[in-house]
Image (cartoon, rainbow, N blue to C red; front, side, top):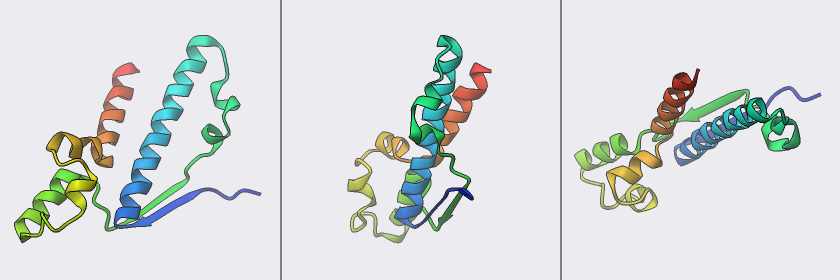
Length: 114
């Protein structure tokens, strides 16, 4: 049988894995809310929603892009790094692409709706 799902990544892979896990959690919470409000089992209708992420292993990932950009700027390599163009050139886009920020927003929204 299925023993669990483990998402693993190093560096940018850890960043992407964390983004995926946060997005998966957000979609699952939204599906539960829809199910509760409409008496439809949205979770059962989607195989993706039935997959649980049991373990997330992230090694040396940039989880807060603004923080990592500041670290790179302190070393004088921020213009050489692909971090800035890949994540949108602005602090607002850095926030949008930071799994730690997304998780904080999700937890705040979830706790306020309880």
